[in-house]
Length: 124
Figure 1 (tube, rainbow, N blue to C red):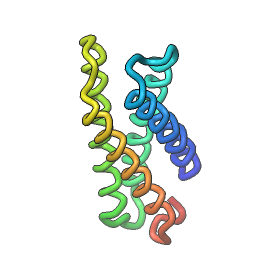
Figure 2: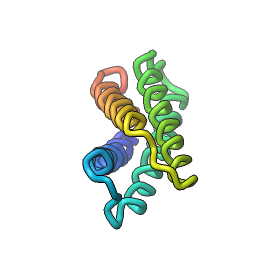
Figure 3: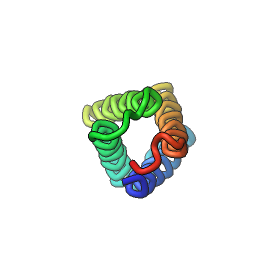
C-alpha cells in the first residue's frame, strides 16, 4: 500500500505545484489546466481515502502522527473543493486561497513521507 500512496502523492504534489505556479504567475489559464486540475483533484481525493484506509485498518497502533498527516491532507482537500466551487461558478479563486491550499497540501505531503519513513509504519 505504501508504494501506491507514494506514487499518488507524487502525482498530486507534482501537478499541484505546477498548477499553483501557473495560476499565480499568469492571468489566464493554460489550455490543459482544467484537465490537469481534475487529475490533481482526483489523485488528492484518492490519496486521502487510501491514507484513511491505511490508518484505520486493524493492526498495531499507528500513533497520532499518521492521523495528523491525514487531517492536514483532508484540510487541503477541503481547500481544493473550495477552489473548485469558485471555478464552477465562473469566478476566479482568491490567490491567497490557492497559495494556502498549496502550502497545506505540501505540508501534508511532507508529513505523509515522514510518517511512512518511521519504524512504526513499516509493514503498513
